[in-house]
Image (cartoon, rainbow, N blue to C red; front, side):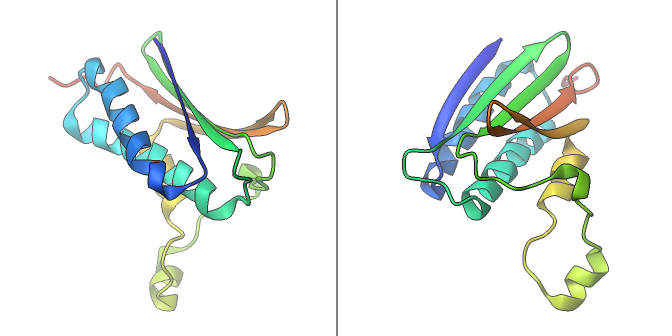
Length: 142
């Protein structure tokens, strides 16, 4: 199975994104908790792109959902070519430091990594690609 969606870099389209992911994954018979966690992970990555990437009005975030061989792969492509995030340099923030500073945000990637089995960020054809993967074998609802 392969499903695709393209949305503008605009938070008004996040509800469309969440609905797309939920409808795409619903037939997989995942538990409600797992299904909602996967929707949250995709929403978090796309929200960060919308907030942190200076995209043009014509740029789009491309989301592809692939189910193959008991693996769910979700690729989120920053088509703007302006993202500078480097996963190799990412250091998760210390929760105590966030609490002390009363800073909002900063835990999104930590959350995404805890939901997914594998998270990769890489370049492909001038675009930044977020590849989120989850093994489906142990996630099926009983």
